[in-house]
Amino acid sequence: MAEHILSSKLYWAIWAILICLTVVTALVARVDLGWFNPVAALLIATGKATIVVLFFMHVKYTSEKLTTMVIVSALFWLLILLALSLADYSTRPIS
Amino acid sequence: MATAAFSHEREHYLNKEYGIRSWLLTTDHKRIALLYLVSITFFFFIGGFLALLIRLELLTPAGDLVQADTYNKLFTMHGQIMIFFFLIPSIPAVLGNFLVPLMIGAKDLAFPRINLLSWYLYMCGGILMLHTLLTGGVDTGWTFYTPFSTAFSDTKVIEAGVAIFINGFSSILTGLNFVVTIHRMRAPGMTFSRLPLFLWSHYATSIIFLLGTPVLAITLLLVVFERAFNLGIFDPNRGGDPLLFQHLFWFYSHPAVYIMILPSMGVVSEIVPCFSRKRIFGYSFVAMASIGIAVIGFLVWAHHMFVAGMSLYAALIFSFLSYLVAVPSAIKVFNWTATMYKGSISFSTPMLYAFGFIGLFTMGGLTGLFLAALGVDVHVTDTYFVIAHFHYIMVGGAVMGYLGGMHFWWPKISGRMYPEGWGRLAALIVFIGFNLTFFPQFILGYLGMPRRYWQYPPEFQVLNVLSTAGSTILAVGYLLPMVYFLWSMRYGKIADDNPWNATGLEWRTASPPPTYNFEETPLVTWEAYEYDKMTLPAEVTLER
Image 1 (cartoon, each protein chain N blue to C red):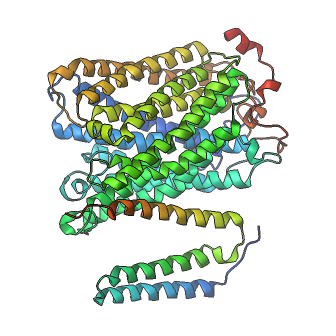
Image 2: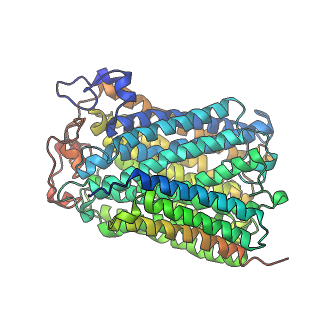
Image 3: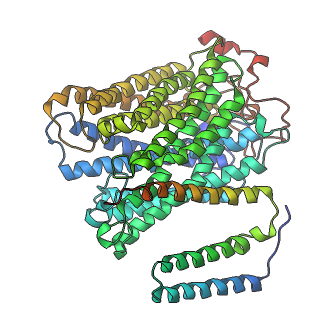
């Protein structure tokens, strides 16, 4: 299995981007966007998680089927958690 | 340690090095398995002692042995210790650790140091849990239900939550190690279709470890944060939703039941063909049923919440999905019985435990269907019916499988035979004690006795006395194997490499195995369970 070695510069750059996005999250939370506030926070968080998976976890540089399978199944499991929980929340009678 | 007892000429994993350091810094999967064996046995007896106190309190209708608050702590700590510190690690961390590399013909697990780290994490969590127990305990029930756990309980919720959080990482690392090892380190010729079913079930268990445990870890952390920093996540007074906790908690904790039962099913799939001298019936169905249980097991969690106020439409979906999980479970039971059909069955100790497993698991599984039915569930929710149901699965199923596996592989682990007569007697005592303890609880629950109460109406006393009497018999049944296993380490008959004439790779190396398992990497040219091509050893023939 070929190892892809990344330069430490890239790691620091990714770290800086993550810190910037954290600051952006905090700033956006101070602005009243109504229902868009949680959506914005989640979008930024998803972006950060994607960067971590792609670079820190080396997924961008792998073509292994097994790695793809692991990522797809993890996302699928998250979907199960969200979809079936929402099956409850979205069909509750409103009193 | 009693390593001196294993002083043979030949070098093996037990006599290669001596001293406490050689154990605490080992990266040998077999030694780590033994570290786990000692630790989980310790926690098993702590949890068992708490169970006996619960049963003693329930001997009489009045709450006279302990106070109500103490009783709440007793059942909470019994559940948390037994589930997180005994049942979940039991077969994977002991037998799985020992056998996964041996069964695939590898020298060790893929990440030996991570394997040792997982034991240290387990011990950190365990010591924190003991600290919690000794400094006042926790009274939320093992489920940590909010808002009681975050806003009302004045017990050690944070400590217990952190203990289980740390312990969760031990499970995740074990699961990771198994998945990578099974994918990457199989000996030449050991294809997935030749994999022993014990490994298929451990693969399925590892999937649950990896995908479920992080959700529990985060959920417990949220409870700790809400309690410590007053965040409003689950408490409705602070804008939270208590049912969200139940969704997140059961997303892991229902599949956790399959973490406990799947490895046991793997053990039974090894024992039944060996002591029936037959190829397993429907290999691929049994293998795929393990994966099926792991996947469908993630789709059924809200059947724990039917009376909690969730939507009726969602309840219907979860009820239907809960029925589905019975299908792969039934496939396994039918395949084991079909394997025994016209087999040359010997009633050795491991087989007695396998019989016990099949019967008790079937009862536990079928009563689970009662609980999956929306109407019946309303009647029996939070009664002793539920207690009896899940003890039939977790104790009747998982612990029977664990004990069966310990007897089956003890010759390989220790290099010594246990006394067969005592083994059969203990299996019988466990079976009788178990049924006497838990069968009356089905009736008690159906009559309406609620769980988690320290007092009860006098008309329930006879059944409660039966249950308490059974628990003392069960305790004897559990103590006996510990005594004769320890005895056999010094005085037991020296075991052959393959005393049961079994087909697995683990039996083709010495007993106990050398440090790197095999003298040379094995080449696998046969399918699992080719018992039709093997002969029965004289010793087993005589004992039938």
